[in-house]
Length: 75
Image 1 (cartoon, rainbow, N blue to C red):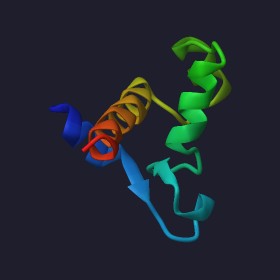
Image 2 (cartoon, rainbow, N blue to C red):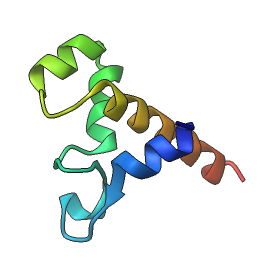
Image 3 (tube, helix red, strand yellow):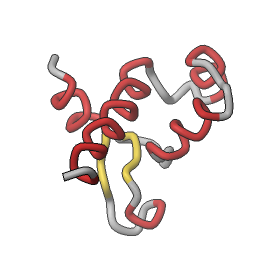
Image 4 (cartoon, one colour):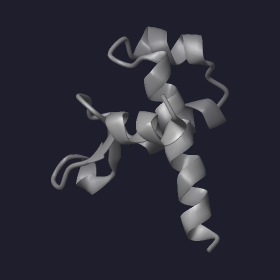
């Protein structure tokens, strides 16, 4: 599965859910939540233990989403 496919299959935006922020499909966890936890020093194992509804692929999708957004912001 290509990275963009991973992102598009896992990251969604739903008006009215978390103010329309990008979330992980099937949860109310935003991409920004995940990035914030990682920036604060949490590792993948800690996040998956604290949020069992997330998967390794969800975390990768959040990172890929942020990476792809970088390209849109810097154009």
